[in-house]
Amino acid sequence: MLRLALYQPDIPQNTGTLLRMAACLGLAVEIIEPAGFDVSDRHLRRSGLDYLDHVALTRHRSWAAFEEWRRAAGIRLVLATTAGALPYTGFGFRDGDCLLMGRESAGVPEAVHAAADARVVVPIRDGMRSLNVAVAAAMLAGEALRQTGGFPG
Image (cartoon, rainbow, N blue to C red; front, top):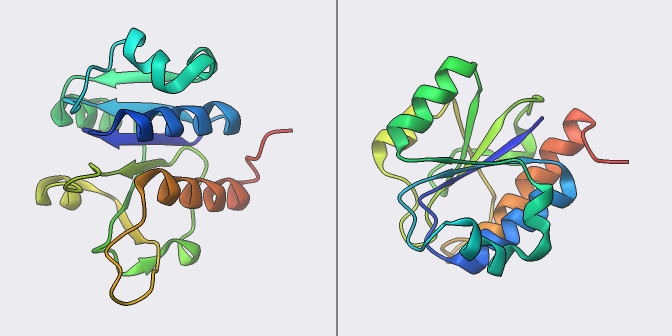
């Protein structure tokens, strides 16, 4: 199963959109805290609607806790980053990969960047900064599912 990890998300509406996408496409979700908003079930239900019951969601209290879990499980971490050199369409995704999306406001710190097993970029036009995190995640997830034959139904 592919996983989607959200590093310290700070916009609840984007998180809700990502949870809904994950539920529909069969992705597990890892939320790496602290988040910029309350990530209790009550608050996530507001942004994730009734889709929250259909997603395998795990909260990690810190980056260190997430990394300990990930390394113990042997999960490959693929970071979406504007600093990546390899376009996501040229990367070979594998079933079980964890797609890591950074904070909407700041991406990820260098230590997180360095810990990733791979760094991919969604190419965009010159002069543009970045895509919305939910849009970028959907693009990566779609390509990863296409490559791994993981689309539902």
